[in-house]
Image (cartoon, rainbow, N blue to C red):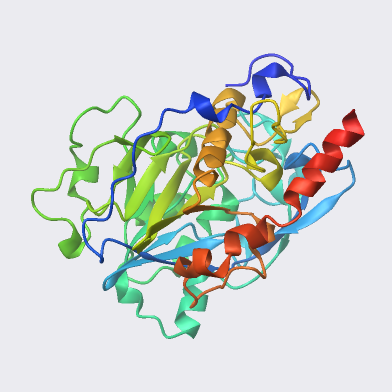
Length: 396
């Protein structure tokens, strides 16, 4: 949790050196089929104050950012990772909207300048983040005549309004919804039972939610998470558990073949998770779906060439508080994990709001598995290092 007052050059927010991350070898694909197909689905956009995302943003500067959803396919079954921003944000719970003269209560971890308490009065996020409504992932899949019966699981990187979309658009019977550790406690009973809640109570009553275990879970998982299986890909002998993978302390090998890992990525809000997807097998290449671990390339890129030449920026600080991070120290560590993974030539990081990918990578029904052959990683980072170098020269 945030403690005390921060300055923009606070050493507690200094980017973590890459050699601080222990590395566990990512397992080689056991078969050519040990991959998943990942497709990017656009949803509604947001016009956001840039200074909330990066300290390079001016006070009055705004940026139009996407809210990506991702379709992950394995054989005849599929997963939606994040649902983006709903097409009708005016139907969100009141605390998400710009209501009550913009003074509303947000649930713990919800967007806002400082949302660390369930009873903290802050501005509704749609007062700060202006929505540009667009079609949701289910509508876009339907337009392409996608068989929604293939959808077996929805995974939310975290609990915020621009990621949970509209669960009421899911097909019936709805697939279960997987959340990160301790998410439901933070979400609370839902609106209107709790007027401060950012989730509708009707969703919590209607849908099946399953949480990943906490960081202290040891050995094979038990209970509801252990019973959550996806067809033939989970054999009777498979046991879910936290394992080290890459630079991550906790990841779960969802299909037991290394093709899809869900990763604990704390700091932004309670229960924030990410996903590492193997999209080609020979040679292996990966996409890291970073959710809101970072809101700007400025924080995790460029990959430093040496500890002395690190051009990454820290979390932005406004009025003494780091932005969009309930635990700035953990958030800073997790951002460094994005950098460490991006240092691997066969890994491309994609943030949920990484607008630089727009117009570069293919959208659904396109396949992100072609990213390396088509040079999309380099294309979405083009000019970044030059801008970072220019910023450093301007400070010296």
